Length: 384
Length: 242
Figure 1 (cartoon, rainbow over the protein chains, first blue to last red):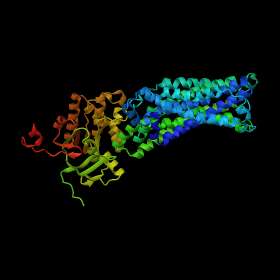
Figure 2 (figure 1 turned 30 degrees about the vertical axis):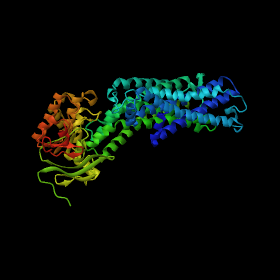
Figure 3 (figure 1 turned 45 degrees about the vertical axis):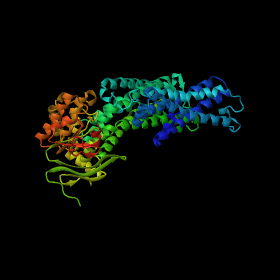
Figure 4 (figure 1 turned 90 degrees about the vertical axis):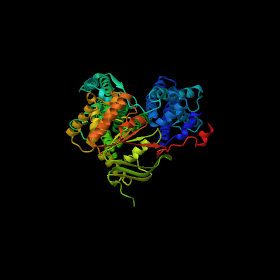
């Protein structure tokens, strides 16, 4: 209970993250309970599939929780120092962070359960009745079990994400793994995957391929596509995701070519150094955003195919991915406080540092545009 | 109206008061630094050495009092003016190297020169030269993360000296070093200052390192320590009771 008092020291950013976690958890809980409500009415194989489709949003919340948990110690190093002085070790700090995130998720899912129970109480209209299983007996264990899933998944991924080195007092360690270690191999392997995927997709989309006769039914009213095109897209998307971090690192090297000015030097080297930390969230964002955009394009061309639930799921996943990128960017900024202070002491103008940050962001945005754009184009091609 | 500083003082402060969020650090310190001298500021931890260096080097604005550099007021400068002054006139070595982790040793040393607008070739040439002088030329293309602390500190010293600023501030520069390295780094710092007629303001909590300096001032609890007059034996009631 003592730990809960730490909430008193929360700032706007902490509160925002907490509310975002609770909101995302509430949305996932709503999807899970909807699957349950439908299953009450028609227990069949379709209800299992419906439940399984709740996994991607759950994974997105877990991903967001992991990124947020990793960023927490660097955001407030003085808090870690204070907790350690009070006798908390790295494992209890990790438990505290995971517990806090799990608590936010529990609160969100609890609110959803409350809404679900209220709706079941003859309030739901005709359109919502099947989703909440109106008039059907509800086994008490089912919603409780389902709702434990969200805090459990988020808390576990948060606990796994906090590193022991970060939960120790002192200067937040700058990561030992930087993008300078990315050799040509790190570029070549994912590029091979992308090329294989491209070839497969082109094969799947060749003229006359429509008569293949073994189309794959896509969920969420996205029609059908051929196995080759789907596999090709999956390969290419995986390759492009793996390519994000090396591309960032090499983009930084490219930016520092020739005789760089201080602005270009700082921006480029910073980008290369932070490539491993920035790569993963950007890759997830590119993947989710491009898949979402391709789906939206498909729905927009065929009015009437759009369904509410997949649209909500997609929005939730993209939202979590965007929030994860923002949190990671804030984490990088926080862990570089001492570097910024040193540069200011050297007499570097804040405008120069801001310019370097803008240039770095623009370069990272270009990489995101390339990988995300290619993934989106290939997805759009596979959807037709 | 304030009196102009004495002519031979390159840096001059009068009655500076500074507190960090209410914690007093300096309570009225007046000090003059002569052109080309090596001045040691000694004092235990928490005596305000770092804050004094911060105020003198235009890193921290003073709460009260005056700081003058080359007969020009520093305490009235804007933030941008202080930045320009630090970049063009002052060098700084801290007790931690504080190198930019993603830059190589040579780039770190060349950075202040590049920031001051020096050409690429001149900046990197001078950086290589200073790395050689400080015995870390073999680290030129490596990044701080791959180096040991004493190498990093030498690179930090090279970074402060490379632009040949008129005044170099060293805030406990030997704190992270072993004894033999301490002497060597200090000797290099002092030799460089003397051979290039730089003024060196050196803060240290180890009084024996002050032997490198031309002049020493002691700081205690945010004030300059006044030389204590010898107390006659038996005069104090405490010692009389023993």
